[in-house]
Length: 312
Ligand code: BDR
Ligand code: CA
Image 1 (cartoon, rainbow, N blue to C red):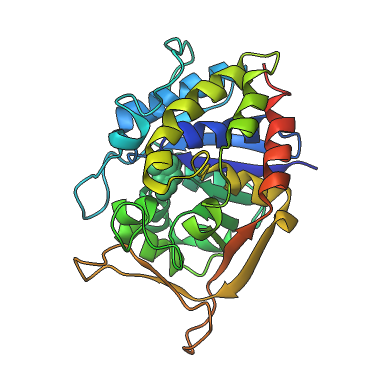
Image 2: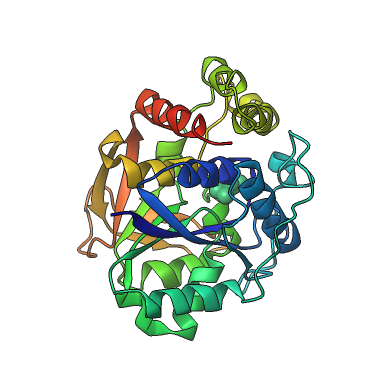
């Protein structure tokens, strides 16, 4: 039995690798990819999602465009990390596959209402705007979602877009708060975890020498993507955030985690979008998320390498 998932994303090189990893995994059935504004504006994220499907040799995957901006905040983008296109690195052809006509939020709602309750997992790799809007449009989906597995937040590790906040949560903190408060089984993969998944030279060389199109293209994406973080953190390689979401679905035993309470700060300008994780359980707030803190990074890269090698 395959596990049906929807990938909500703002590609982004690390989103691209996550999408490719999912498409290469026989355990997962990607029902659709929903694009959201984030790393770059929506017109680019939906275009990039289609380019990635074609690169992976999966042009039949359905790609939907969603929210053009966050619920309350102005859109903040991250071209300084991902480049002007959001997917700088390899030169990828303009996609032939068409964007679906249906809005991403409607696709999410319809899929969850049509499919048996508790079967579809949402993998979120960007700001949570589309998911929040889907919950506003049809609140009954909250009891039908199997789980949300989200890359976002940071606690012990601090933030990456402000000292306090991680990018995905910062871009739409109100959406993140709404989604976290909806009582849906939730796994959060924060910077505390993804900062251990580094694209070291040795790991990227394994992608570069693959005998397919996907591996070398991913290596070029990593060459571009990691330069910013290598300079910032002084590490061998940069953190490969979003594929950790797919890895958690495939091999949760690669991660260490605790079930704890998470609240998103939406008031203070200084700490807007901060994820307040009650790791030491010092409040009586109820756990609302499984928060990952550690990852077996060699195990993660072995899995990713094995999967990418299966692609076109
Ligand atoms: C997250 O922000 C984006 O730039 C990446 O794609 C990832 O989803 C990391 O903070
Ligand atoms: Ca992302």
